[in-house]
Image 1 (tube, one colour):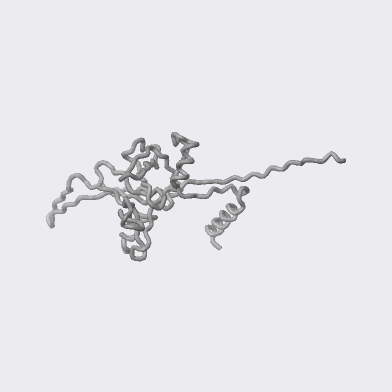
Image 2 (cartoon, helix red, strand yellow):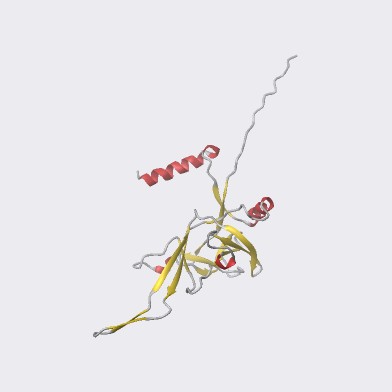
Length: 217
């Protein structure tokens, strides 16, 4: 058994022990859960959320001018493009900045980079869907960059089909759904995988014991 497999097995065993292991479950953020959390944290200062699957967002920046080199053999014109990858894993927590709406459905703006992002221009938008989940629908843009491209989990290698994991705006289960969300399709479109918000939830159950000794007759 590999070291990684052993570590994963021990983690599952620790979580199975309940309060002894102290592990939190990662549950989807639903409207009911969100309302209850807002009751305890009205300003949403303490609540932290994360994505249910890794998202890789890429930004392409092309040189503003062509680079020209002239030799006796040929004239070389090049325009280089710089790709910046922004991986958002399940371990990257986000803070809710604001709550808006998209086509009458609640829209949550999440900041995953507190050091660099301080407003909605660099936040990610998650809209409430008919499945009672908040799904990724808006990617932040960057100045002097092309529109961002996002992939679910990872970007395939060049020798593979690049579009397999690329997120596209689409319906999830029905054409009657109000909003499209960023997702990938599997099994000929019969399975649509979106990027949804989750949060860690730990349920603690305590049992207290007391003794009521009878005094006798």
